[in-house]
Length: 226
Image 1 (spheres, rainbow, N blue to C red):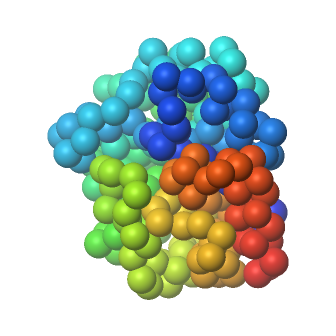
Image 2: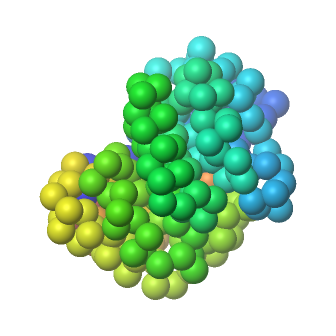
């Protein structure tokens, strides 16, 4: 919490015919992560990329791979993504409960990756309480997961602030807070000012005239609110 802001460009908005070129662009811009949205057409209505893409991305960049699993059966597939090279793996609170979420966190850590728990806009932050001491990051969705280009849901910053307080209460001062959805230079300060450290950006980066400069500008705008 309140660490220097890092931008995690979502390759869902990149040019898949020129993906390595786009990875080089975000490296030049100082991106902190490559955000990889994995969707199965069940947990969310969209269908995107999977294990082979993560494996190939791990070969062309040293940036940490931030793999966001929007899938219905994460326990079954977790080992595949860790073996493929994921550095951070996010599972949704809405797909696993209680001991099964604890099991997912343990599997991720045993595989040498960092563990993140995501919550959808209508999911109360209290669901993270039993697990927050063991997590490396919490992802607050500021749009409904499934599609890029959506508008930021007003009030999402209050959930970020609530997660930050829960982490302090649990003594997990190193917890990262990530926010995903509808964030750019104009509104990044709303979430970084209350504790967000990692900002997922899709169109705000890849649709910009200069994606590398967009990364720097968004990160700077977020850091100004610290």
